[in-house]
Image (cartoon, rainbow, N blue to C red; front, side, top):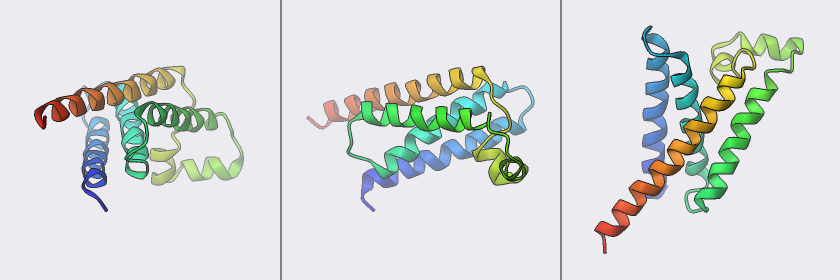
Length: 127
C-alpha cells in the first residue's frame, strides 16, 4: 500500500468516526451525517483509484451515492430485513429523501474542492 492510499485511508476512517459521532450528538443536524457519508464515499473511491482524474472520482462517487439513495425506493422483503441490521442501516440507509441527494452532492463537491485546494497547496510548497 503506497503512501497516497494510506493518507486516503486515514481520512476515510476519520470521516467514519465523525459521521457516527454526528448521529450521537443531538444538536448536530441529521444532514451532516449524510454530507459526511458522501465525503466518506469520495475517499473510499480514492483509496481504490488514487491516481485517477479527480473529475472521474467526483462523478463515480456521485453515482454510487445516488444509486444507494435510489435503491432505498426498492422495498423487497429481503432488503428491508437487511436494512434492519447495523450494516444495512449505515450502508443502505432507511428511506429515500431528496434532501439526502442534496447533502450527498454538497459532500462530494466539498471533498473534491478540498482535495484540489490541498493538493495545490502541497504541490506549490514542494516547488
